[in-house]
Amino acid sequence: MKEGGPLPASDEHDVTDLLLAWRAGDEQAFDALMPIVYAELHRLAHRHLRGWSPGHGLQTTALVHEAYLRLLGSRQVGWQNRAHFFALAARLMRRVLVDAVRAQQSQKRGGRAPHLPLEDSAPAPLARRDLVALDDALNALAEIDPAKARIVELRYFGGLTGEEAAEVMGLSRVALEREWRVARLWLARELKGATP
Image (cartoon, rainbow, N blue to C red; front, top):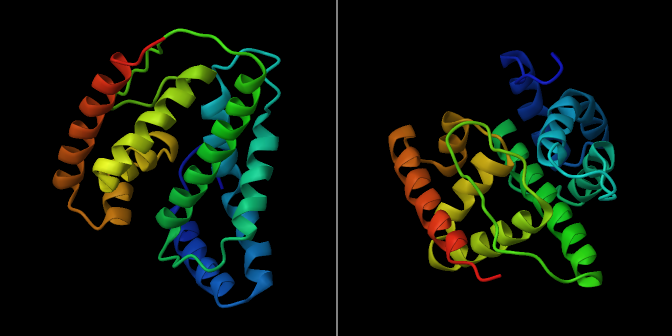
């Protein structure tokens, strides 16, 4: 597998087969799965942490390993394919990051309203308080429209392409892009109105 790039088509099929075997109880399937997806998980984790200042206590490898441990308990998920796997991995990484930031912030309060660009291109790294603000906004969006919140999670946190996210959501690419635009606008408005 090429470092930092998407999985080749042959590996995508292998991932799906291994996920289904793992769900069926084959522990060796999980052992075979992790080397295939590790580099992709590492890339996702690195992208989330690249803009954080030194001393935040989180490292890329530690984030991948924490997500890995949480994935171990996820066998009962109705895996359909590689995109579903990475969608769950993105959700778990989001939870790990937000939990870590919330724990740090509980020790020291303060901060200002965040600025968070949600653009079509690869996301800019988030400052720690921005991540918490985005998590709060996503949770609010999920109460209003869970599908839009999931699309943001897939595209922003999971790094899935429009095609991959559409596949996970069971939508056409056009419908997904429309929902993605609306979700970004809603979040931008919500984050802009956040109080310090």
